[in-house]
Amino acid sequence: MTTEVAERIEPSPFQARVLEVPESINLFLGGGRGGAKSYCLALMALRHVEQYGNRAKILYLRQSYRGLADFEQITRDLFHSAYGLAAKFNATDHVWKFPSGAVMELGQLEGVNDYPKYQGRSFTLLLIDEAGQFAAPSLLDRLRSNLRGPKGMPIREIRAANPAGPGHQWIAQRYVFRAAPWQPFQEPKTGAWWVHCPSVFTDNPFIDADEYRRQLEASCPADPELLRAWLSGDWSVSRGAYFAGVLDEDRNAVAPWEPGKLGDGWRMYLSHDFGSSAPSVTYVCCESPGGEGPDHQFYPRGSVVLVDELATNQPGHLDAGMQYTAVRLADEIREMADRWGMRPDGVADDAIFAQHGSQAGSIADEFKRAGVYFMPAKKGSRQSGWETMRRMLQDAGKPDVPGLYISRSAEYFWATVPYLGRDPRKPEDLDTRAADHAADSCRYALTRQERKPVKVQRIVGF
Picture (cartoon, rainbow, N blue to C red):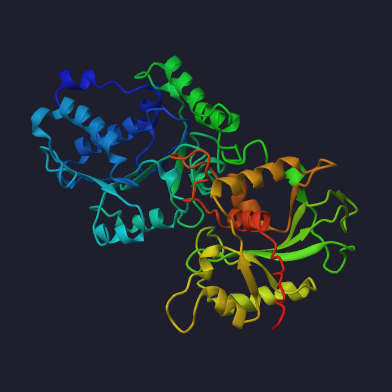
């Protein structure tokens, strides 16, 4: 790379500070939108190529190939500025080959079926862009086994993400709140060192900041917390985006209730979202007749309180299930129902009533044989269900309208629902890439339809 060309590649102050972090430390680029994080990743790749020549093997990943398009253009501009036509890009394989023999691959990793493309291969620099699109870190963590290099050559991982995505919670816990920005911290499980490098759109000299701010404001006019997260890179937006403004722990959370203490008129039923490789979530739901609960708080008629929870997620993994069969799960559900002195019946996702074409019948049939009785939630459209849930969350605490309340003992609910974001393609819907199992079970609890008795008309003469 000639001196003349090098002078034309000027990093921003944020990018220059990132470049100064020692290579023995992994990086998390985690700020607001428009902070030039992707361009920074391209600069890190360029420096790696210059430093290590034919030993440099770089892998850049996004969740989808469509997401690679913008970054591909960034690399075309940057690498051609540095090397001219000597840097070759194979658009079919998404691979850069540099004059020194270094190689950079632009890849896609949407699910476990994509991982075999990288299994057994070695890379010296791993760049993961938009890491917040991954609801759980397990697939990205698996890629660490691919980081291998010659003795004496540093290997490194760099992840970039914006707040309020499907992976908001695990990213915030792992990288953002572990230490102050720009201060190294050690990851407990792996011993690897990391630094959180935040940026915001005003750190990007390549965009019109005023115009970009107007575009962000126009994109979420009814979601001030999401706007704050995008503008300022605030990862403390614990309400995510979808339930912003309606879910308030002070208003919606109630102290755990003791079984057997409900007054007259309260109705109890189950709500269930089935999962095997993904978690299943079951709630004991109590519907108020318009009176006091065991906590001596008044609940307007029709209010729903989720008083107990059965979530089958693997410890430490919010989106991985315990692989329970319906029979095994039924045992757990019956035990929970017995504890509350109720019959194990309620509503569940319509999908478990689908017939599989075998003697076993549907999943609902398996539950029934095991002593747990579900009827379809008749959930209708997801959007209308979410609106019901949002309205009842917001109405909690009002004396004359039904609200939604959740026990503080419902750990899976409080670990997932407050962090759920909007579907970027359908803002009125919830992003299903996140751990939405508790939210789905709660939605079924609110949109269920009571089974009405069938009137039989007697025909004279028979």
